[in-house]
Image 1 (cartoon, rainbow, N blue to C red):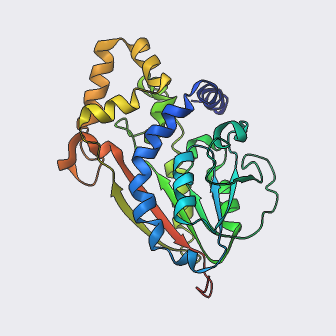
Image 2: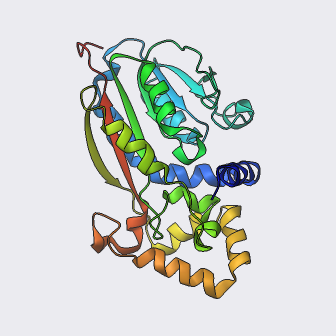
Length: 273
């Protein structure tokens, strides 16, 4: 897939995605992450920590964060250039301040932050390494960056998020840019700057059907079924369920696809946040 085709696909996805359904699926996958992982960080020793949350997808998770840490100041950046107030303003439990567009050619300076909760999907960003660099540079010494990414889809190309707009191209044999391969080696190569560890965490739906039903709320999945036809769609689904070698716990079967990985990195500093 050429860069122009990729950008066209991204734009189509942005214009047609059902944000409510998207947020529901996103929230189910990330609930345990927020409640179990963030609470372990020493960031909130400060009386007024500053938290930067790029992107607009995890609105429900942001709301939960504000309940957990009501004294924090929250900053968001709108990576999709959509009207952020239309997505987030209805969540009255917090006040998010749009500061800059990550996709801008230049990254205007923002105040130093104590925590960057990096939940956005890297395949939506034109230059993932530069984006991570810009986010990293906003952290004050001793601050933390928490990144989430999904494992590859059964085709072995691209994150699970690729299903939202590019799976038909993958099935057609086209090459989809694998942002996971681009961004994470770059981040891990900063070993002298980062103290990093990969953590596997899994959110399991109560049944295979429940997980499938949640995904199929997305219009792009419905369109995929219509495009492929029911027989081929079912074949793709079965392959996705049972593809070997993709997930850390093969005994988990289908819901191995719901495994989320988290990379936590602390910026060198005195540790006294």
